[in-house]
Picture (spheres, rainbow, N blue to C red):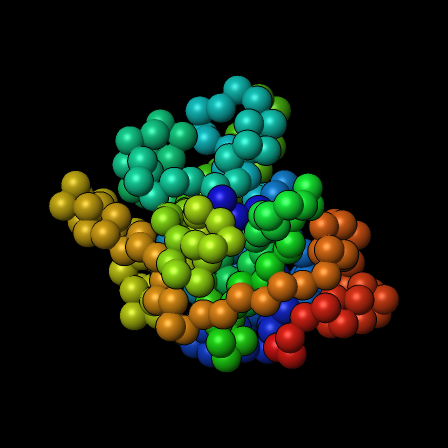
Length: 233
């Protein structure tokens, strides 16, 4: 699973998505968690980053609270599960990030060691995601999204048995193409949902302060606390 990530290097989003001309105003996020707002690039309008609630609410859901349990979608079953297969066919997105957290079991200890996983150069990347629009009886709408996960690479494997799918830049446009919907094309997209190259990634042990969602704040105190326990990015 992937339940926490960061989006700090906002200035480099222009390198990640060079075709976007205008970016929304945003602050660095040090500890993004499910049910909170996240930025995503949807395939129905891939020229604009939009805000989504993290936790997919299927269009057919009776209660939006279902999204609290659906912040991840397994790549292995994404074409079969009713909760995700329709979105995988029609509503895909890219979710920018520059690192994510996982917790490593420490032998002989009841506590787990938080680890921060990122690209070696510290640059942003894009998770593969799905999005939905849920409409309530009163006509209001909620846009939501989920991260797709897969088996771990050799960097993540000692830490956790799952990792988020990170797409290669050359696959962004194919992932975002709304015309890609045929069974053959969907199977080709499914083949992209693989562990990212371990040679380009690294993992750091960090302070247990990250266990607190209070570090989501972008105030100077939270920023300083985060940087004391992290490598330079």
